Structure formats: structure tokens, C-alpha cells
Length: 407
Image 1: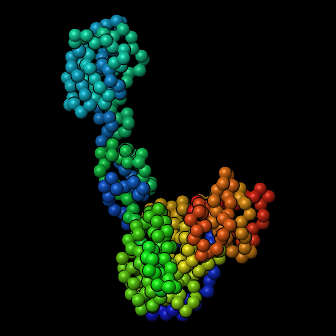
Image 2: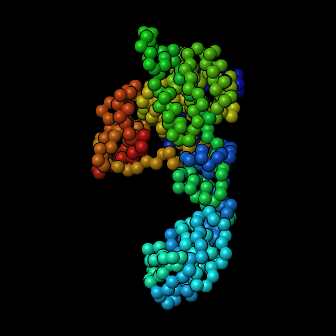
Image 3: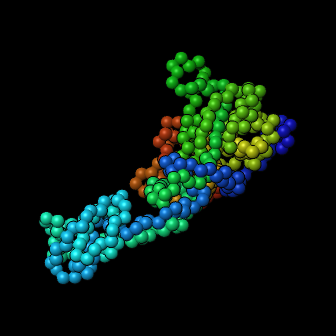
């Protein structure tokens, strides 16, 4: 759509598409962003863009796996035997002289073993006296880690793409890697539309206004699914002001999320705010309940997601559409955000022409819809842990099975 598109042009798009169609369109645009290199101590939870390849061999030398005594097999072929203790080896010591016949070396876990060592006899099996170690018995295990027994230089420690976790970070650091290549987090600006909105926590709030609540949940969801919420702004219902804020937000963000102003009322101006930026609608509304007014578009290089203004509708649609978009942009799979699981469920609302997503909790192994499914409800929203999906015209299941999604 050209930059001259006006409010009427944008809202003339009539297409009501299905939930599955909308998710496919989201997936098309949920492509990973640029790659950046970050220090390892900031990499937890990020998506690795290039494989982490070992820069060293581990262990690099023969090392002891136990506290004990490094010995030659030839010297302990006949027991008992007393061997002169030729020295000590601690982890971090440099290379030692080769082990000489008739001698042993007191050695500690992780220390390099002298050349010629065949095994480490655990200290529990050795009696030390006046510089000699007497060995009367020992178990069969050698308690030595061979060079490269963990990994070799050039081995792939963590493949890509992969969401990094604490286990990965241990392996990567051990491979002598201090920084990793990850996909950049999508930058997100949240615009809350409405003259009635004020910041929470003010007792002297003007009559007729309400605390703005939705952006806090949406901002948390952005972070949970790999995004960076760089700004959370309130916008008045004034088109000129909205257009200025939209332009500033689009210049700074990969995604701009609007909350409210998504329908066709006199003050529903969210789409019109992006008209001067050449907004191209990808879809205008989706056949779901709650959240039918959800819309998705592009203004230049910036993606725009329009959420409804009712709290439950906004957070449900953010979970269903924004989460997979963020997952894909941050380098993961958009499908990972929509892993529905079949569970037994109490009766949930259904609709003949739309997908219905009921807020629910899990009690035992049963998904139970909350009693209040009002799209403006916020107390019951706080109790919701899952969504139950009822497809259009779905027949009742004899086993009461339903698709559920972690909220």
C-alpha cells in the first residue's frame, strides 16, 4: 500500500482469515534477524547462529581422574610393593619429568600425569611412610583421562541453531570459547492507545480513567519469547500524535505492537497511525474468539502487530501470534511457540464459525476452563495457566479430549 494510504483505505480490507491461515502468514515473516557476537556470560537463552567449535583438545594431556599415586604397571606386577615418592603433581602444574622405574608420584584429580604413567592407584589403597608408598592391592580401573577423551580441537561442541542453556555454556567455555554468534533479539516497542489510560499506582487518578495494565503482560511475554522490549509508551487518541509516535517507534524497532484502537470505532486509529509509513496489511482480522480484531502488517522494514484493547483478548492474541513471531525472529522455530497438547478437558465454549481459546487451569490431569471468559476480565486472567482450543464446528469428543497450550 502506498504511503498516501488513508484511514478508510486501510480499514477497507475485509478479509477474515482462519487461525491456521494467520499462523502460516506469521511463520513466513518470522525469519531470523542478523547475527551478532556476544560474550558467553550473556548467552544463556539465546539462539546459537553458528556451531560452537572447540579451540582446544580436552584433556590436552594425560590427567588423573582421582587423588592417588601415578605408577607404572611393571612396578606393581607383584604385590605388596613399596615405591619411592618422586614428587607431587597438582592440577595446573606444568609437565613433569617421565616416571622412573621403582618410583611413583603423588597426584591429585585433574593434574597432568608424568610420561610413563599406566594408572593412578587411589589413595585409599596406599599407605605412605617416610617418602615411600606401599601398595598391597588396587582396583582394576586405571583412573586416567586420555588426551582428547572429552573432545578434540575442531569438534562441534554445540550445533546450530540451538537455544543455549547452562549445560551448553559449560561445554563451550571448556572449549576455550569466550564469545558466541547468536541471532539478534528483535527490538520491540509497545504503543498503548487510549485517552482513558494512566500509569498504575496513582490514587488521584482523574475520573473516567483506568490503570493501563496490558503492556506489562505483553512486555513480559516479549522477553519470554526472545524479544527485547525497548519501550512501553501510552498514546492518546489523537491521530497526529499517534502518527508521530508510530514513526518514531518504527524507526527504532523490528516490531511495533499496538494495543487498542484495532477495531472500526471513531477512535480506533492504530492502523491509520501507520498509513504515512506505507503500512501493508498482511491480515486484518482473524476468525477467533477472543481477539477477532487482531491484525498484522509491515511498515517498511518494521513489522506491526495490532492487539485488541480488552486485556484478556490482548494477552491471548499476543500468546497465539506474537510468541511465534518472536520465536522465529530470534532464531528459533515459530512452531515451537504453539505446541498444543491433547488433554482431558471439562466442557469449554465452542463457536460455529471461529476457533475459541478458553483460559483454563490444570487440575490433576484435567484442563478446566475458568468460569469468567469475559474478554475484559483481569482477575480471572491472572489465574489462567493454559488455553483450550475448540475448533469451528468441532464435534464433542467422547473422551473429552481437547487441544491445550501453555499460556
